[in-house]
Image 1 (cartoon, one colour):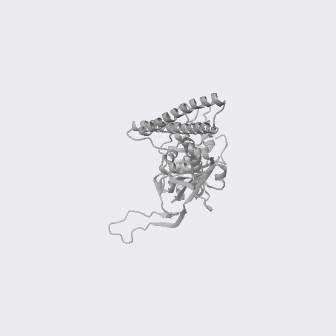
Image 2: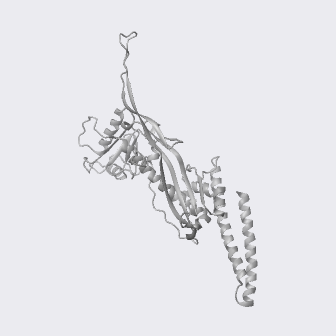
Image 3: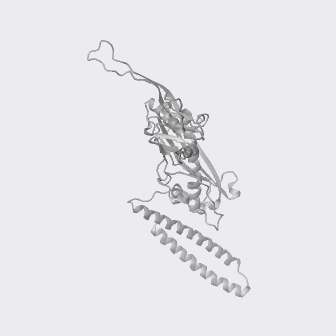
Length: 399
């Protein structure tokens, strides 16, 4: 990388020297004829364009060196974002030099969210800057275990009924030892494709930071936003994933009497319902509105019941992690055994990939490109009884 920076600096110096020479030539032409020749004007324009491109390359290279130096402080290089992986590839360099047809490559998701994901947008002299809207936190994917599949569907066996008849027996019993029973049903979960695209000006190919911003800042986030909604509440109809909430068991009080029931009581009873199905519920999914209502509960002297606004910490209730997400409708809840892979499993068929095309529809005549982002995932819920869904509709609002 250091050698590349030295080469770019050498090229910049050469271009600057040529510009000085042309400036002297232009001065003589103006004195002689009060105007520039077309040849001189064209040469200057070409040199200025080359100078701008070299400066952009130099800035990108210097930023990459800084990231690598920061990563080496921990004994390894800093992870590259998806945009960096694309713009640093030989395939992209070849496509940018001759943008015809389509360009496609797989990318690996960055381990952390680097600065490039929020990214410096395109330089002001090219196009107006873009103000990125707020992004909400994604959480559902992080709750469950993920594996990989090489097929377009996943076949699995779902447990229906388990009858545990285990008992103590004598050394030489007169009758048969007790028989337990487990029944299953075969099921198939399809692998769904989630995709979207955006149009962009051709200039985006000449500006690596802007391309990174398009890919990391908007397309990837939008894809994951839809993924979260599908994992939680996908209908299972048509091309949709059969979501966890969709398959979960409906809430039913296990038979515990509660006076003046509140949202907190309802959630504890739902956790109990999961535990009675022989699973341990490790997560609670709520709407941010419902979680805020619970956090704001106060005693009669207006002290917060259990929240401490001055201290930061992971949201939790009854010793379980709280996951506030707008993918959950206000008034609804979901509790269950998300971790461990025994009750639910996510499947990656194809990681997020990006395709860039210059010849999509009328892109050629409009000087545009099409940037497509897509992934393929599946979801298998082995034990619907390990998840309980319900609502707070019959609970007093003040609670």
